[in-house]
Amino acid sequence: MSPVRSARPEATVLTDEQRSKVLAQLRHAGSSCRGCGSGDYHVGDALYLGFLFHSERTDAYMIALTCANPACPSPHNGVRYHASEWPVP
Image: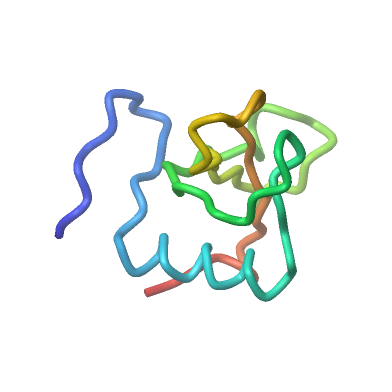
């Protein structure tokens, strides 16, 4: 499946392979949702942070995560990546 262009021009759309790599890295790190403790996520688009926040490195991106648990009280989260960590296909 090819990436669908985001409605937000500043967002970087990830491929299915990149999304899978993000999920694999989250599982490897033992990440879990702060709202409910689930380890299952839906991976969204990436937002370049380097120009938004002066305290961020210029190669910083935030990748959107949504908890897959429909009962989660706080399902929206994100994970920060730098260029050296980017899930390249």
